[in-house]
Image 1: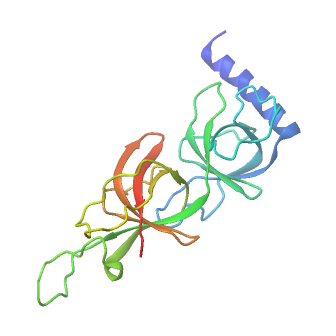
Image 2 (image 1 turned 60 degrees about the vertical axis):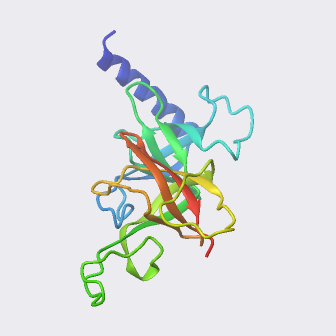
Length: 216
């Protein structure tokens, strides 16, 4: 049996299983950094589980955001966003004849950075610092992400003597075309918290950041 035949058979089997046990799912393929879910790319059914055997023998674990998907959606790639009921996932990896690996998201974020302060007469050509909220420019908005506690990372900039060390967090989100994450950029969670990126690494499967939560 060649690879193409194997892919067709496994895709057909996944689709049959999804139509029986899956829920209605909408697929988005981001075309803009400022509106990743502007219009649906596809619709189908999908079931998600952290058990690769899809035995559904136990409940979903709240601290395990990495899950596998059974779906009848025919065209999937890393970076696609899937919404199923109240839950949102992004695909981290999609390979032939294997269920795609997805990340369960718990935040909708906006990425911002500082730009040169062109109108500062006292310091022409100067740059704002990462703490200048009024000088922030949005690079990406409306992106689903997974944010959880982690080791964190040192954030560029001076520290106040006696300051309490901020909590460390890590974030996973899809790769964003045209956006190159850098330390000192801000992450705004739609639910309220703000973070400063201390370290980041991109890959074909998405981006992973270490962050510190802003205290004020």
